[in-house]
Length: 460
Image (cartoon, rainbow, N blue to C red):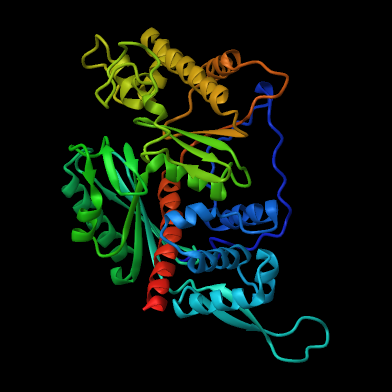
């Protein structure tokens, strides 16, 4: 059933940034289910308050192919989404723009079907005059699908254009790595199955955003390498156009977790923070000055492939000494299985259980991984000096003393200055978080696409 809480639900309480936390007071968050529908509005409101005007970068809008008029429409659309319901007069005031400019932009958004008008009676005890005309996002205009490709399944989230979650669906995968074309066909099958399961007409899906591991350029749709794909250097756009029923956008999955954390997680309201994902591999999303950073080739933030040992352990990328070759799930299972046959562990949970029972090799693997991850996090603090770091893991939590070992390695390897360390949140990563970040990305990209189409229609 459709959630009763809007993706951009109203929120009127003033948001206060948490003060940076010292090592002794690092916040450790146990696994909790984050409300996708409730918190996104907090992100938009916090950004609005920081400058009393739209914070969206004009350079970024130009990169999306929007001219000045379309960029204004995008800013107005964002303002409406942030406020849920707002008048043209209040939009002009919020954006410090002229009423005529806002009226023109709203006209284009109405014609494109992105927003709708709602009449409200005048406020006050004496209700006279014409009803006020308020503007809202037209949630019924489009449906968006967000997907996360994991090793064993494709998780699908479908939401309307307002952001209300229609539902989720998990489509199992028979193999964890396949040719690019087969993967795209699996994506289509997952979309069809999700729509059938949720009673959604697939023709109503206006956009699909896909998160996958690896070196993925989210701006161009080009994948240099992924642990989910057999080939290297694949341009997915032609495959998407040939096999999928709607515009499709692809990005590194860790980037989408960072977007999700920015929208409704520990990063909401923050301008500079990092998200480190630890599962089969290790990924990272970087938010700098309020925007997702991808790097010059769109492949930045590959933290899992930072080198921690010259000629070290073999990584799944083919190189040696990468961080994830020591702290990724596959690496720890490999190391804990050394010299063993029938009793070799097959998962992180089995390694943790073995360590509890006094297995020396399992203990050593957990200890080393904790130390190496702590040192790696200290390097991030030394490089970026972020407000906050989120460590999101798809694995069972480690028992004591392993978290303490990681924190001590972080503390002792961070450059010591007379200031507290950045805030730190450690959470178990809800699988749906990946797909929800993808859905948020899809809503943003479909908004840009529809506004760009409206601009082209106007020019014609």
